[in-house]
Amino acid sequence: MKFICIGRNYAAHAAELHNAVPTKPVFFLKPESAITRCNRPFFLPDFSNEVHYETEIIVKINRLGKCISEKFAHKYYDEIGLGVDFTARDLQRKCMADGEPWEIAKAFDGSAVVGGFIPKSKLPDPQDLHFHLLLNNGKVQEGHSRDMLFPIDTLISYVSQFMTLKMGDILFTGTPVGVGPVHLNDHLQGFLEGQCLFDFYVK
Image (cartoon, rainbow, N blue to C red; front, side, top):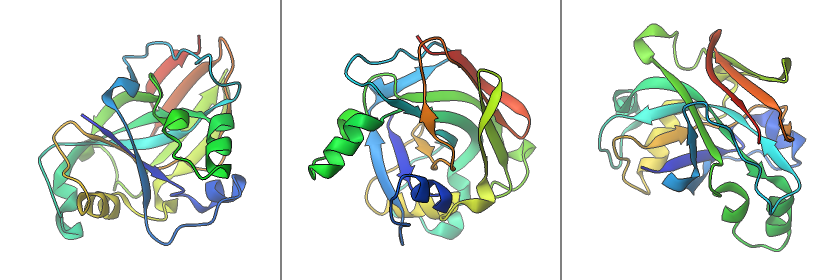
């Protein structure tokens, strides 16, 4: 299993981090060891002083695929969920400034929170989904899949041109505006179409 994570897929988020809006999908990978699931706590790493939450719609790949045509991409997932791409923002800034890869800021253990999934058949159009994040009971992030620069099917098709997608792989589709830091004992709850799909604490 691998995590394919899309960067800068919402224009407002790209702007808040002072990044250019991409003309094609930007993606990076997280390893299987990055997973945090089953509402288990997220443990703050000791190598960063500024870890940010990034709430994202996620989809689970349900079959093997390579060089997938966009018109067939909808056949490669039947569940949609919600997750958090945790980012060591201080390390990411330094890596980017130095022109270095930034896996240490994105791919560390526990950095990919995978919440629950809902069958696609029980949801509206995948490009018409609302989601939000509560941090200590206050809404801090809110997004809508219609605002994605690159829709889910486009992302699946694009990524599959470069690497084979396998059953169980998870695609993180990008985060909307409103990212921010987490601290010890923070409580995070994520909602997709009104359903709570993750509920965990920072330790």
